[in-house]
Amino acid sequence: MKDQAESLRAQLKKQHGRPAKTFAVVSGKGGVGKSNISVNMAAALAKQGSKVLLFDMDIGMGNIHVLLGLDAPYTISDFIHRGMGLSQILCKGPDNISYISAGNGFNEVIRMEDAAVGKLINEIEWLQYDYDYMIFDMGAGAAASSLQIMLSVDDIFVVTTPEPTAITDAYSMIKYICMQQFDSPLYLICNRAEKEKEGLVTLSRLRFTIKKFLGKEAEILGVVPEDSNVKKAVLRQMPFYLEYPHTSAAKKIDALLQSYITGYDSKRTGGVPLFVRKLRGLWQKNS
Image 1 (cartoon, rainbow, N blue to C red):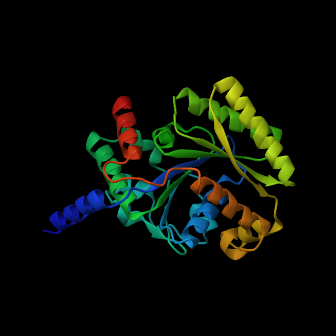
Image 2 (image 1 turned 135 degrees about the horizontal axis):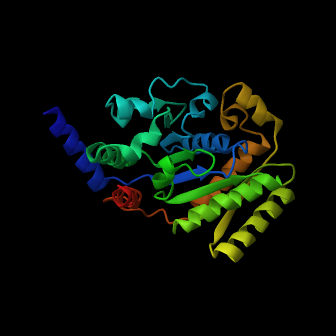
């Protein structure tokens, strides 16, 4: 009876609910503040009243829970090895944020039996109706284990800094994504820029290069400035958006999110989400 009741609730959510907007936050290399951007975007969206799920995909080096100053009693490896459901390994963060810790076993997902893969995809599909946004914080570089999720999301946010190596690696990541025939929007964020102009020049050049050599349009989302309060917040294990809400970095998070939200069509309908449809198709193709 319990399973039937849960199945009925799930069907009702699917018929009358609206699936979450999904996006992945990526970078070409580590150390550019990608996870910090993910966490603080989640904090900003939650502060606006949205329900957000942060899914840490930085396998073996996940730090979402650390940046939130919280524990991670369960991880994605508990789903794989212990048969726990995604709803069971969900952890609650501040405000309307929930998170799933990366653990160290997600590279085994694509080698799971078909029934286990189907269970993962189905549970992600149901979870979409419990949230307004699902944010996948990807590991630096292109890990094969998370490629399918990265290529299935609605949008990809690429984080770089003005450093030449970060820009080069960001372009390499974007080139890799384009080679996989990813056709959804790409959004560019420059983190830790000393000046707004420096960040905008960085993003403009990157966008031009992407268009010229890859034939792909990319949107400039915004620049998050270098801010001493960001480092203080990290040391205190708190999102800077919550700990120092009036700083320049926090205000820029608001600005880039507003730019993003007003830039896409928010009239989403029920039914099978495109994210899940693409994810299921990619896994079947590679199984």
